[in-house]
Length: 444
Image 1 (spheres, rainbow, N blue to C red):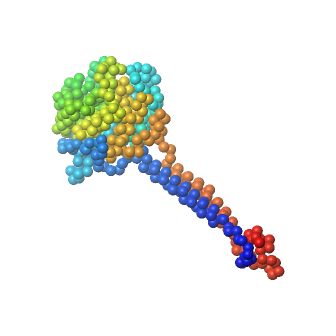
Image 2 (tube, one colour):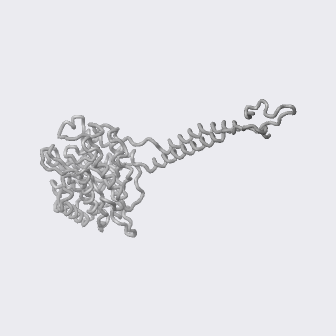
Image 3 (cartoon, rainbow, N blue to C red):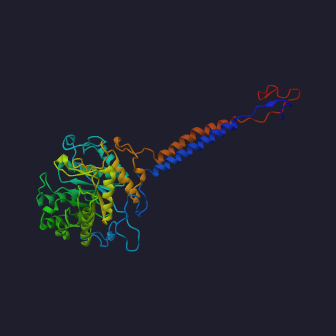
């Protein structure tokens, strides 16, 4: 029905409201989808590429080791060494990165030989929540696992069990550094070493297996202080159930027992990464180890200060530059794995764990470096508040779906009500009734 000539028609506004609500719904949908996708590609995600790339501050990978597979009964499936090129492909496997880890902390530990403290607090190694946060932080930075310092004691056995449980829940690897020297740096009896390692593998062997190497890996500290006969006896006691690595301080020290071990992991915490002698020594050790078909685990430290323990040597951190230079030396030495020194050695001050004095400087430097090599996500840099223990984001794809469902349930009824409020066509008036009489939609 046409309006009476000369009248002004008020246009219905339901369509404008509908348009606004539609835009809001689309915006909400975009936000939810964006958050869900962001969670999938967030700090904890690892880059899928298996080809390391060199970037600024990340030296190109060193020459691949040309030696055969791990000797002494290595599994048939590990015919290609970690970090070595496949025979039929030019693509290199990613070189795993581990960090030395310590579980000796109690509330009183922080009162001795410390000049800095963790952002997460002065923790106990029995605190499961602290351990969960440490594993999350390390994994986010691109670290594949911890090599924890251990020998068989009630406290360290309990803490190793806890670490393995936390690591399994987060798909994180655990290796063992067997502490064969006592507090005065004297070697433990070889019978003690045999007993401890036999117990270790009998109780936790499968849980300690590292996929890159096909079995558990044990670094034996203090091998320079044991005879070749001692090393042979210990090797026989573990009966091929683990890879046994020396920790010699020189090429000659390694070669003395090279035929009795599966490789070398040199713990060089006080090295100056800018000294030519450092790169030369790493190259010489790598060459010697690979010549014997062994695994070479190269060290990378971010600084050192031995003064709290009565020493004088100091290697300044340089705002993360020392760690980056040390990582460059390690990767250039054709390693089978890189060993960061350390996650939490707070007396020699080699820790990269976020601290009150340095914050996340070294951890962020490590993350950026590994991201440039395709071994970590750059999103891990300062992704969380370290003082809160790196609790990680709580947004997940499942939560995004729930949020989307709630938003839809709220908005759609509103759209339905608006649709019902759409004006109907005016009814035809009965004869004798003035057009528009009683209608609120027309004014004279």
